[in-house]
Image (cartoon, rainbow, N blue to C red; front, side, top):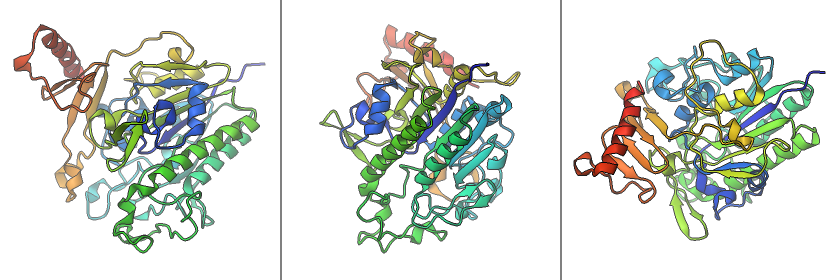
Length: 441
């Protein structure tokens, strides 16, 4: 009998930086499920992604740097081959449950020419889907309480008093149960812990809280808290982090009951740094404020945990990882083939998961142009984010404009080294990194 290949479940949290998890030294939140996943698996200390969600997701799903295939925020090129296509074409059953937001992000008064320009969830390579924000922005509704969820061609009508990520978790477990004897790939891009900051089912205020509905988000929920703009208050971020950990624990427990843990590679990663208004404590005394949207480490440094009992032994790695590396890693883990002439920029870190040295990176590269081409037409100030390109080794970080930082001593990037003041060592480092940047076109 032919041996069954590895299953893969790829979990991506939303707006949760490296500093939030206890296994990484965080002390502000209780994250027992993820701590245990890290203690019994592989934990990476130098995983970086793009500073915002769409740029990261496009890289994750295609294995390519953004300068090759990024078409705009909230969009993925409809012609792109995703990991869903690759796994389905390799005989895997495929499923996505969670946040989509890659088909049509443009509000009517902003960049209307970009509406409907992304990839439909139906065309993204997944046999089954259960997602939030499948269509237009103004139709997305709540992602948390009373969520608006599009499942296999229909909107769910029975979500009152239910919670989005609970529904997504249940769907993935049901999918796994129905495909126990088959090879499967499940992608779980969680809604948590993205704004709006809201009570979870474990919060005391859950019952009295009225969720966001399908009306203008700027007018929802204002009567819930006496503080004007309560949804900008991160007081519920702690509840959200801890509930997201609880859901992951429930997913793992469900896989164990199905007898699928040893057959399933679980990968957990964040999509960008924590919200800037959230400050957390690491190692009991160091305050780290989120850097979502920033190109500093607080915007790109995220947790990464991989676990598969019997295959991955407990380990901690300082190897550099970026978001293009996940596709080649899961391709190698499952021994499937990528499409012919399919370009992948990422580098597999699967050998490291098996305890081998592998082929670790000397650098990671960022092409960060999140709002292009909105910056040309949009009325929103947020759309005017400029293109930023930089390259980072473990110690050094070089921006295309010439700023060089020693990341060992200056993680907040307060003191740039300029080329006019370079000594021989810095000049050689600068030139080496500059040569890599020049080739990224």
